[in-house]
Length: 248
Ligand code: NAP
Image (cartoon, rainbow, N blue to C red; front, side):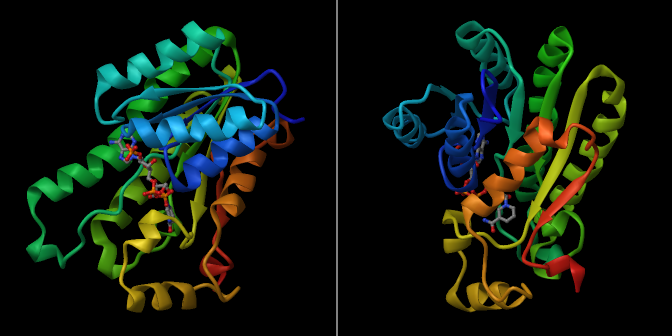
């Protein structure tokens, strides 16, 4: 089991890719901290993990709030004694009308969740990992962290920011035993994907050379690799899980 005795935290663990990854970590024997705003959904992820005989707790936190993020790491250390792995996955797609129609509040909301949330999470996770002398972090970007789609402009900007933030942090802490990487999925079958129109779904599916959208488990498997000792010489890297989308 590649996560034996590790403590792993997942933001956005109440649904979709985060829930699938929390379960995948637990199946590899990690103790898991599930983070999100929705209590019932978070407790459901914990129930699924405990049902399989593994350990997990839910911590309610909004990743845009510094006090919540600090408390999420404090609670992890209180309950499990340490923090070895963090998957900073919480994110949102938001409203994406054309640029001249975009509201300032929507800009702030998208950047707060997708960028500030990752920055704040790393701030407290890395502080704990420095005390331990080791750690592995995976930040959630997207194909649009690497290439652009014109009709999801703010989301594209926020995910590009996650890539830059991650690379700089990876360089800053490379000698401290902390590896920090990025996972960049194409369209994945989750609530976020289900929220778009049928026309948009068909368009998105057609963008991937493999000819379909991906599953949460396919992303979880990539996150598992980056989080594990199998990736011990990998840092500052962006792993595409995109059915060949950016290879075109
Ligand atoms: P999802 O099912 O909508 O999950 C989003 C998760 O983010 C939820 O667990 C949600 O939890 C959490 N979240 C949102 N705002 C939060 C906040 N302020 N504080 C704490 N948690 C927050 O969608 P998903 O597809 O699994 O998305 C997960 C990540 O993958 C996102 O970063 C997304 O941008 C990225 N991604 C998705 C796709 C795709 O096609 N699905 C492709 C590329 C990248 P609560 O609502 O409980 O807070």
